[in-house]
Length: 448
Picture 1 (cartoon, helix red, strand yellow):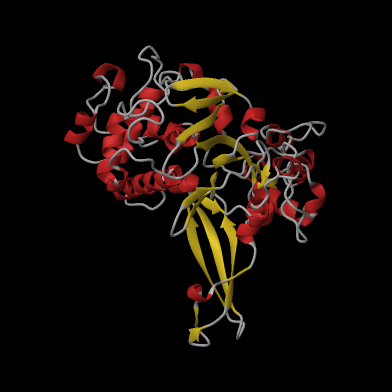
Picture 2: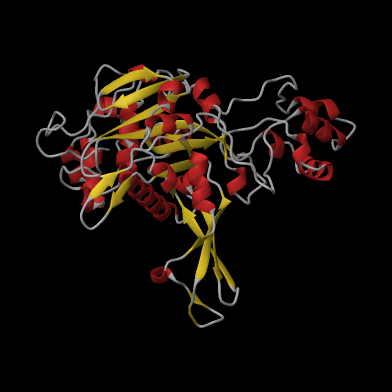
């Protein structure tokens, strides 16, 4: 179901449908060539990007008469590229996502001889790992790239057995982020060798997010492994549908750090080796949430999603617009000859416009605070605002100038390509391989 979430990542989808060119006959397309099969994929070279592109073209094709789509060719290529996914056993959705993104990044970087691929531009963030020696105080730090953040659920919430207490005072995704970024003393088996002491000493570790990605994937660690057993953590974790504020956990204050949910993955079952994955996806064209359950696609809503015990959350960075104060500062730094044209070209939100709801969830207060949201004039000094205004309107009107706003672009549609011309009701669900039909009978199947 991580694959379904990727197919609903609008920027990634549009790249493969509009800009990526797989090796196929001139003018060919899936509707004229027929569906991709395991044999079709096995006869060609192993290319996850090519098969992902073919699969997206089938899913988002304007012709919906074929019904559900079988990703046989995509799955065959995946098994050739990553052998651990062979067979029909239950596989982890987050592991699949990491392998898929890493493999596609490798293929694209080899093809373009450039590290800056669409995968890294959208999903790649940077963690700042700070280690402090408790003997001499020496501090060493390094940068670690990430494609998703794996968050532990605090033990104090896991130990709760009262379901009412879990609902009244639930664990939130902010509690998980607090635990991820707090100072932690490493165990004896994990000690670092201090450069100054020249020996392994007691030390602490702290993660800080140096750079947030445009697409933020949060993975909640719900599975535990021990020598004797494997178990699942069913603790409910509350999360915002709109307005996830990451400002407190990032040192990057030059960009907007507010995110909105566009997809979620839910695991149904008692453990990591069994069960079933479903997902939710937001379709901006239809302005509707959809629940994807194999070949069955039904409409849903934010309230239903907020009640789920989610496994993975997919957020996209919100595009902000200029406030009245920022427009005023911009006009002060604009040449007198063309003040009206410069201001008019910048999209302006009304001062009376209500702020977007955060679905009742706000991050814990920080002593230092973070970059305020839209309209928080008190959080930014005037000289700093003027400096930003001098750098141009792009710094005010959009935090991600290299990428267009996903919801607006999808709503506008794309004539000629078939993108945006149909709602998710006509988007065929990705059906799993045909073997072992029915839950609980036969060997578990791989869930994509």
